[in-house]
Image 1 (cartoon, rainbow, N blue to C red):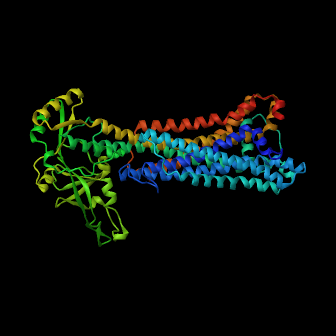
Image 2: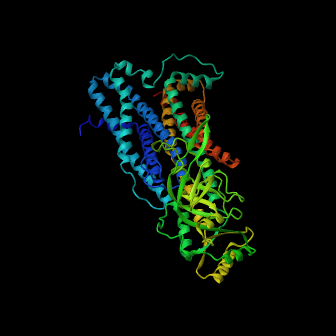
Image 3: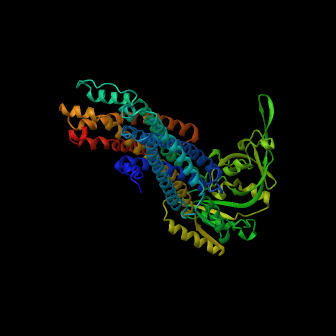
Length: 625
């Protein structure tokens, strides 16, 4: 290899820290974008979703968060890429001038630095793709328990986009440098990105830190604005992911707990096949394969009424919820309303199939009130539908000339009986494709005399294992074919799965946050380097070494706090007004959000002081050199 060909590599190695920071920043930007695309497809949202992991209502909530976060992650990546690459190449402007002054032609000098740019960008994109797949592997293993290679074609798309972005922004300062004379290229105004060079004037000791820091920021106004914009977007992303993630997790988990009875220690009594099928219906929320040929109407699955009577008499039982579970056709029943004095049809007459569950409103072990209200104890013709039915059957469809739709203003028909819809619930059972109606009404409509499922809620004061043993003894004495199932592990698995998915979403911005921290360190390195002459003068007249750290801390604090204020404000507005309706917010939630966000701010501030601390330990002669 010729000496000229080795110049780009030697130049990068000479600037190990600066080159390493650029590579790390670009790598994390590429990795975060790829990971977001891969993970969103796994949870069933995005353009490439192949299956419904969650109910459609939860998928919609996840989809909104991931859409906003995807936009912000890409925006952060694009701004980071433009800033760090242009910063890297702008710092080569002085080298460009030195080589030109030595008589080297523009084309050869440009080739050297273009080789540097291509090498750094290509290496960063390759490492980013690898890190993105590694992060996807870890997340899939933790959340789903198994890893299957997903949409691998995202990798070349992300690689191409960021490669082009980095080249575009990196070539701008390089092309600008080729048009400069050697004298202009050597000027600090171009090397440090100063708005104007200014003259060094004597500075009084009064307000020394403020005067030096503010003058430094004004001289680099363009760079300051860019870093503030970048960090503001990062803090918007951080606020949405952390605040929105914690609040959405608490809110959606609350929905699932109410409709499934998680946390109440539910015990199920049913025939072996029916109990296993119902557990699968609950587990469908986490993607468990379901037996679609199961016959819910089989007469052998009925539970004698004596079982419920005996269980109700137990001292350790708080509630016995008798249910009739069937799989039946359903049909939308439209309604009419007056809009601006004109009679308007709400909905249509669409059809489908649903898991129809008859429950006794007086003894329900669960609650259905995610939207609207639960079943009334006095109204026999009311229904609560799952969110998946609400969004697949009761929605506006211009192709069918259905321009107005609202499930709470319409009805549903099943078993030749019409029920008014009073509520919509987010229920893991059958992925939200479920309809709840009064038990007695369903029995009368289907000519059935007995339920085929019992849900038992034990008292909190009793020993759970002892209660299960007593229930099993009573049940077996009446019908040996009946089994007792502990539903709590399945319900807790659903909550854990939902929590893991939200925690993974909260993990996504860590890549961008780390990239921004590295970018801020690179920016502060340039700031400290630009003030070398001032530091030498200040040290020469008796200033202590920690003055360098004070000046850097003051400027870093101004940049971070202004960015934090802007990002936090927009992040809170987006989270509460757009992404979450009726959010569940507690004092604990606010405390957790504050700890996360303030910790991120503190870590970034401490890291930004590294260049100043490093220079403060140098002697005056070394700083001046």
